[in-house]
Length: 191
Figure 1 (cartoon, rainbow, N blue to C red):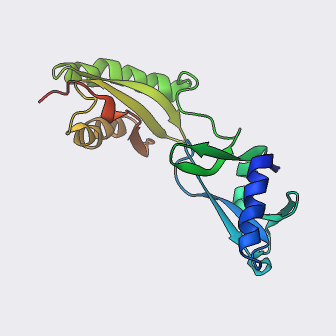
Figure 2 (cartoon, one colour):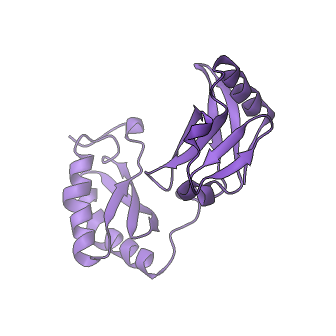
C-alpha cells in the first residue's frame, strides 16, 4: 500500500527517538485539489489509532492511515528530500495524474473548447490575451491564460465574472473554472 524509502524511514525513526511516547506515524490525505493533494504526516502515540484505520508496519514503526486516505495512498512512496532550505518528506503518488498530462477529451471538453475558441478568445484577443482548455475533471474546468492575461492584475476578475459565468450559462453542469496559469511569469499584461 504505502512504502517508505530508507531515508524517510531513518528520519521517522530519528524523530521518534526524540519523543519516547510517539510510536507511530499518521499519514493522511488532506481535502483540497485532486491535482495537487496535500499530505499530513504526524508522529502520534498508540492511543491515536482509530477504528477503521489501516495499520502498516514500516520497519521499526507503525503507520496509521485513515479509511478515507487509504485508497488514495495505494502504491504511494514516502521519501525524504534534502533541499537548499533543509529537508522534508515528499509523497510520490501514482494515483495523482498531473493536470495537462493528456489533452482534454470527451464530449463536454470538446464543446467547452469550441465555446472558448469562438466566443471567449475573440474577446480576450482585443486585450492581447488568450485562454486554452487544459482539462475537465468532475465538471471542473481547468484553463490557462496567456498573452496579456498572464500576469494581469484583473485576471481573476476576468476568470470569475467573465469566463466562468459564460461557460456556466452554456454548460450548467460546470461547477467551477480554475486558472492554472503561472501568473508570476507574465511579461506584458494589458493595462
